[in-house]
Amino acid sequence: MDNDYLAADHQLPSSTTPPLHLLIIFFFLAAAAGTKILIKRKTSNSSTQQLPPGPWKLPIIGNLHQLLGAQPPHRRLMDLARKHGPLMHLQLGETSNVVVSSPELAKEILILSYDARDMAFAPYGDYFRHIRKVTSEELLGRRRVKSLRPVMEAEIADLVTALRNSKGVVVNLCRMLDALGNTLICRVAFGKMTPKQQEAFLPLKEEMVKLIRLLSGTERAATKLHKEMDAMLESIVGEHMATRKARSDDLLDVLLNLMEEEEKNQELGFSITIVEIKAIILDVILSGSDTSTGTVAWVMSELMRHPRVMEKAQGEVRQTFDAKGMPIDEAGIEELNYLKAVVKETFRLRPITPLLVPRECREAVVVGGYQIPEKTRVMVNSLAIGQDSRYWTDPEKFSPERFVDLPEIDHRGTCFEFLPFGAGRRMCPGMTFGSTVIELLLANLLYHFDWQLPDGIEPRDVDMSEKFGLALRKEHDLHLIPIPYYP
Image (cartoon, rainbow, N blue to C red):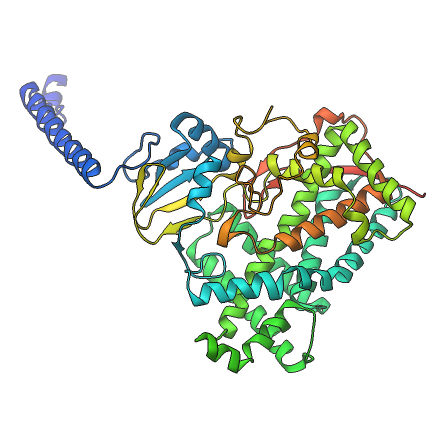
């Protein structure tokens, strides 16, 4: 019975494996075809374009797998550049990318022309030049930042009051700084917002930042969020158009005034529309709320890890303003040379944007002896540049004294070994605004409070893990105890 059972329908099928000689023939045919493709590709590359070196690539995904892991992308790219060179080619899916990790090549690449659309990616030409001028002079230039100083001082004073009212208990400083950043940038952009507008706008802003940071939002989620944000901005713009005064200090009114200067716009050959205004305001809000206060969180973390530096910086602040008498003013802050060095050293180790805004080549160019094809995305790794041992002694060590000894090195884009705000025509237009907020906020925090770590936490235990996003942020919030100081 058993033999009949096996011999019938339930008999095991015969092997479908091809004969060995067919497998051998298939293998050699595949190898020959692959070799032909590789030779053709190599010949094509050598005859038409010599790309920079880079790590090995997989089909379809290219080098995406090499950016995965516990390290954030800017640190993975720094490690890869140390192995493959300061000009490195990566294929990220269908996009060709070149990563720049040296001051010399950064200087070369940052003076070339690239393409894109909004304020951060606008193509060069009348539109880009005008938007750049509007942003850097009318919106965030020195004159405008000076006029916004009372707004900054008022919001920082509210933070100081809240910290005093904490009565010596542990506070989440990162969360308080985030709240300050959101309120400040919205006041700068829109003026005073109603509680209802704040309640609706800030969660939308946080969701947009989260979506960009994770880079994992679906198209449907992104579209829905964009529509909601656009409707909110449309409402705020409409309200300003109906009620604004002839002169106002907030950025939205400045843009609306420029839109109505028809004669000036005709001379330029184009005009700013409501669409551009909403795009610019959204750029300012998304890029401005995290950057300044996020840097302050990094500075405070470094100061708590290095008590000697904290004591020296705090002593400078108090000596300066106790001698002058309060309040903390612009003239006094200009004298805080050591605090400025602390900020620069933090920028070097934790740049606001470790990967500068990507640029796209409008045409093929030669950089460092290599051909960069048209439409290649170019990324400058400012973190890798700031930790280049050819320019920095003990580059991983936190030592503000290096900038005290080298005061000529600043962050204004003229020293290519130090690029926290970028350089050239794409340099961050909010540099003056951001630097002013950072210095004013730090001076207040160091003057008004002594800072202690929670029980059981030693300086070496302060967590410095990074979270990659629109701005480089701390992965874990900083919890401290503020002890009010009274002169």
